[in-house]
Amino acid sequence: MPSIVIRNIPERTKQALKELSASHGISMEEEARRIITAAVTGGDEDQRGLADRIRMRYVDEDDPILILPSRDDAPRSADMS
Image (cartoon, rainbow, N blue to C red; front, top):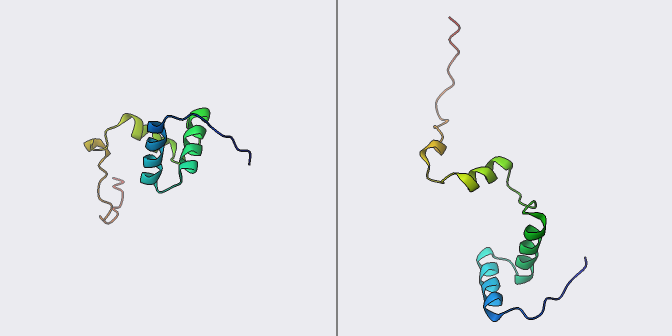
């Protein structure tokens, strides 16, 4: 895999990258790879499904519309009358 060297990164940027990568449990190099890939591909490398990405972008997580009913109830037979 090809590699690049990025020089003259401000210390604050380097520190922020270090903290971000630590919070994700990955190396600074991997974090930088992910950031660059997302920036140049428009985030197409996202592993979530389309519905999840739309929900995360437009809907509040605590929105009551997203609360799904319990699936513990026994199935009911269809009323064909």
